[in-house]
Length: 608
Image (cartoon, rainbow, N blue to C red):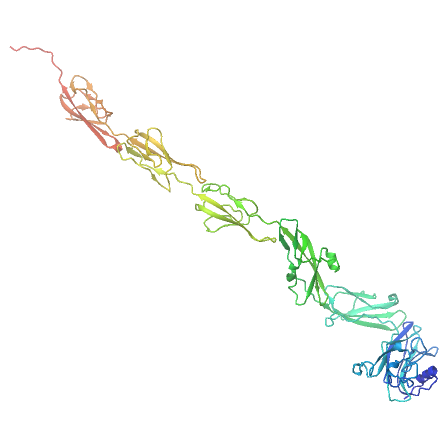
């Protein structure tokens, strides 16, 4: 089948009849919404390399203004009036039989598939050669009805075919939302990021817009753009004002779900300087915990720079000199998707802790005030290995009621702030308050064995003392010299001197020393008394004292307590006994003999 229109085009251009065969035609009416239309195409033919000299298939793109009935062929070699054909666009390299010139508009010839060209097996289409992509275009009147006819045909015979590959016929500016943003395509949007969909029409003010998603029309969205923050299928309907046609486009938007990074730790250094060198990458393992895909990390001093992915990131991240309290911002980037999060962490510089301490009053007495340690640094946790010492773990206060002994106390400062654990130790001695309590018998006789004290309640001997009159054999043992001491009552003191943190300790006990009793007495040198002498009192000798006086015979009138005799007693000889009760020393007895005579008579008588 031939076509007169394409034959007319070839005759007009070459003066030769085409005699078209196997014509293929596409034609339709259209109304443009632009004042300039375009139609990209590529011409391909089996005649390249064989019959590209004079036998030529041809292509025509015939645009007719239905109002003026004017027809124009748009399928021309750029810059010429020559129709598109094998003859008008060729490369003589692939057919040396043509009369010079061998080439014709060679700049528009693309590839030859065969000898000397691209291997035929690599041909994208089943034709020997193709042109470059070219564009048929023309100015038009908006709203005017036009007719378009695309026709391609063989010349003279049907042995070798040609084809035209056509692109998008642009007769208006439909909205172009662009390619879908899909997880499967690797171009999805990062979670939390807003993306602006743009209808991409010229002069948006000349259009009305309706945006919708799968739930229907989106209220109050009538502009040429739509800001999107969630996954969905979005459509725009654009209608040029004054033109009845509504043009649409749809775009699928999907979002990556990018987990937030793991929590970074505060990076700490234990030094007593204003700055320290930190390895910022020490946090990368913690940051990567939620991830199974590769991520990279960039460190910044300012959050705004991290968010902007600025070029002023920290380049010395493994040896960064920082200060205490400094904030570091890290941009965590998914290398596959480009999605990112910005998080921050702190730098901390801690002075090395000092744990040394003492109990400066050691040794301590068990009755003293519970002591607190004197710290050179800070308190950690106080402890003692045996468990016998009662100690406050927080303050180090020692309870002196703990068993006496020597203890090693430990102050443990837990590792923190980049500083290792610190342990310091000191010694504290607790001395039990000595007991001076002692006792003797309450009373001793001077002739008894010398006594020593007995101790009770863990009492011990110190130095014994007493008022003058009491004599000690040994003041360190408290042994009393009874024979050398005067009779009397004495308050004895045991004094333990201050030592080992304990003050002086004393205890007292009262002891009475009783002298041996003496009962010796007499009634004068002769002991002879006259019954009219009234009374006679005893005379005590050798320290004798009155006890209980009795007489034998008992007819003697005598005062039992004083020993005074009533000489009016019956005349005779009496043995008087003085019994002295000396308490602990027993009894002493002495006797004396007296004679009571009748008074002498003065009468003289004469015998005989």
